[in-house]
Length: 183
Image (cartoon, rainbow, N blue to C red; front, side):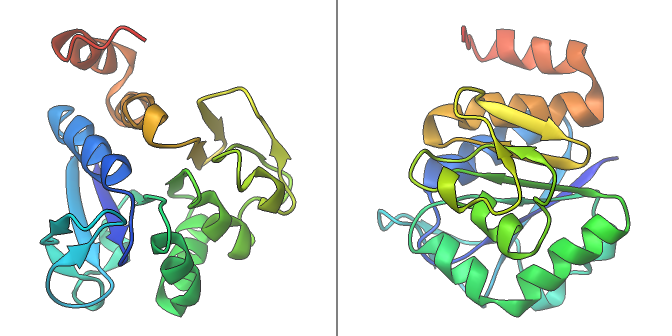
């Protein structure tokens, strides 16, 4: 079974985390939400989430993909954590997927993963995606094993695209229909 690690930092954007986890789990993709520290993690709007695990207690090698939700100051907290950078670089070296939405593609950029890649992100951070050819119009961009998306309003598209990568178009389409998602 495909397995995804979602890393949550204080100040994450709740829609970008929960909607993506929901869609992936509907697609029968195993998702582990890991907090940078033990205990509940507060979102950018004060919603507290209890992660499945603490980041130090998971083995990133067990996952096929790492997903980063955006939000402020969540994205800044991800950038400031050297463990996150190491996990991203290790995943890329092992030809595994890295995915980020909204402001979080800047974390991929800081880790050097967007060089010579097509990518997108929230309009407020598109100019910060160093080394990338930025798409301002596409809701989700896939370039090799790097997947990026624009923001909370594209979270379902992002989740469906991730399901498609692991389970195929037919599975993603059946989830879209069951959710009555008409985009």
